[in-house]
Length: 166
Image 1 (spheres, one colour):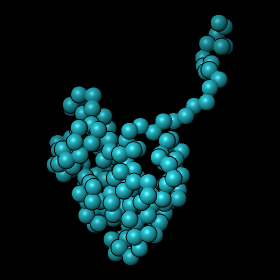
Image 2: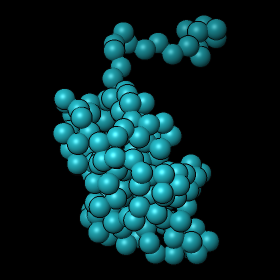
Image 3: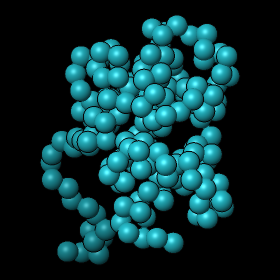
Image 4: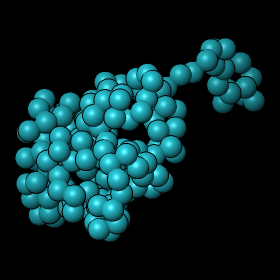
C-alpha cells in the first residue's frame, strides 16, 4: 500500500442503518405508546426519532412522561424552557412542536437509559433527586435545564454503567 493510500478508509458497500436500541422502545412506553404518539409503527431508527421531534409530541404524551418519571409540570416546564402556564393552556390533543418536544424526547431518552443502567426506574429516579459531589452537590435533575447539563448526567451514567466511579 502506498503512503498516499495509507489514510484512506475502504468501507464495504453496504447500507448503514442506525438501530434504535431498547431505549427507544422504553421511551415510547414513557410517552404512552404508539396510540398516544399517533404512530403507526414502532421507532426503528434514529431517523424515526428525528421525524417525531420535527412533528412534535401531543401534550397527552408529555403528561404521560411526567407521570412515569415522577416529574411535576413545573419541572417539565423548566427542562423544556416553556412557561408553566403556557404549557397548561395546550389541549391534551395539541401537538407541541419544536424545541419543546425535542427536550421532552431527550428527557425520555435519559430516563430510559437511566433505567437500563440502574436496573430499575425507581432507583434511577432516586439517584436523579440525590445531591452528588460529582455535580458540585447539585442533584442531577437540577442540571437538566441545559444541553450541557444533559451531557454531564449522560456522561456520569456512562461511567456508572462501566464501573468507573470518580
